[in-house]
Amino acid sequence: MEIDYKLLKEINCKQGVVRAVRFSVDGAYCLTCGSDRKLKLWNPYRGVTLKTYEGHGNEVMDSSASCDSSQIVSCGLDKSVILWDVATGIPIRRLRGHAGPVNTVRFNEESSMIISGSRDNLVMLWDVRSKMLEPVQCLNEAKDSISSVRISNHEILTASFDGKIRRYDIRVGEIYADYIGDAVICASFTRDGQCIVVSSADGIIRLIDKDSGELLGEFTGHVVNNLCLESNVDNQDTRIISGSADGKLWIWDLVSQKVVAKLSGFKSTKHPMVSLSVHPQKNCFLATNGSNILMWTTST
Image 1 (cartoon, helix red, strand yellow):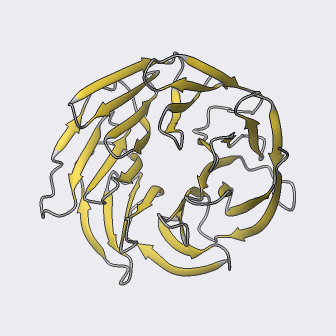
Image 2 (cartoon, rainbow, N blue to C red):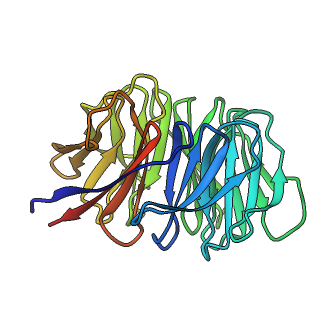
């Protein structure tokens, strides 16, 4: 089945370099994290800024919207995690437990917990509903910076520059670690929850069976250049998607492991394609390129 990718939108976010882009849980909105210390809420289909959130003391590195879209959590180089009220734009809470810049942050599925990962090698869990300013738990197994955190309904998946991915099963209190070898720059679950997509600094994206740790496929060709490039699967678990230092979004067929597309904006660029976000319900995705975000959809 051939899939064509159509570039729908290219939006200049006017917030310096966009460090991350994230769809909301329902896919109606998106968040952009800027090197200008600002966080923006968008309607990406119309290219309209809905609100700007100011309060970080340095670059904003990641953000996540709550399940009911009433709150946002963000993190940055200022070592802080901020919980925002979406409507008012006012910070509800500043969480300052990390000793280093915070690279990555997520809500759990019920948005009752915040999970943050930092260059201090720690993953911290924060209770949204309590007024506590200290983390309720600290995961300290990593020996180097945390590059990504992903959450399923009962698992926390972390990637670290120490070359390992770690899966924390909250139901049974177990940790499972897989040694990848090179620094891991991104790890995410496939949509069916059976596999993990792992990007590492050696320029290889690996598809790993979650339970057995078996290597199911390798995807190569894109350019890493010591960047933290995000990868993911598409909405139907049929394609692997990754950013690349050559300014293109690379797409591979999951089964054949062949490159099926290299997507770029309306004009060529020297900026790398770093962050990406896949729509929760349909085959549509966003990626960052310098100060721009780009949106593609598929026509089968």
